[in-house]
Length: 311
Image (cartoon, rainbow, N blue to C red; front, top):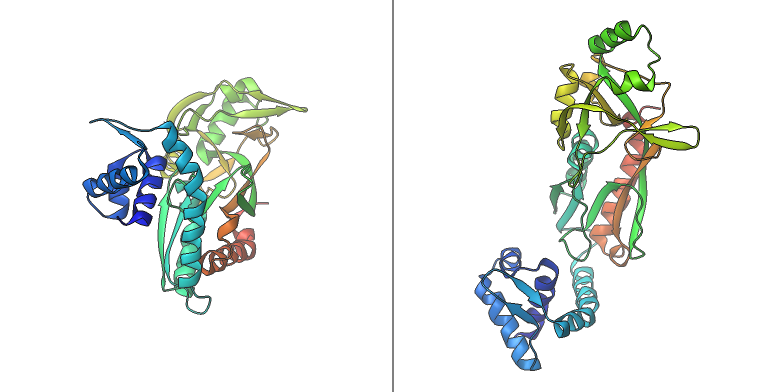
């Protein structure tokens, strides 16, 4: 029995909770994954995985075994990568996770420059609104907003951005005339059509700061989407107001849209600004591909951030 391969299959079955997902990831038949784990169970004399036709579950002993082997296998993988990589000629695959909206607004030119500088590194870019789970998902770097509370992870700040409420210029003029002022009250603001972002689990609300407190606004959505291109199209067409980070509005829209209700401090998250971080595992920074990539991305964003964020 190839015990090392069986251990790696078992580790990923625990993390993905699926034989077929592990098989797809490793480019082998699901039967091979199952057979290797059965051989491992036979050598140990215990059941690690309970199998049914529709469900895979890990036994109590399987969970204990996973906890003991997981860190060891990760260290072995890091050691293999460290030996195989080179600072002089970096190569291999680098998987990066980032939100689609951020990718469209900021990351396309960054990764174009990256490919020019490191042509032998294959970029695997996963643009998703779901947070990558290091150690479970196959990811090397993640670019995302908000704090990071995992001690195993490092978060390097890239940019800090506030939020602006935008309207198509003609719609803004129409609403100013209707309200008789450009300094809208909160009631008037709540009566406006709203273009809203939806996260994986729920509608992302609008909050307004009142003194030291944040108050949720009772908005009137006309469109809800998790796709920034759809939201920006609706904004351009004058369908409603869009609360967006400063970096989201592309240059092509800057002469078509205008900020509104600027006297209010608005945010989708009870904070006047959000920090975009580059996140990676502390233990992997010594790997040439990770270190070179982290340093390149941080330097690029530092150099170009004045072109990306309105101040």
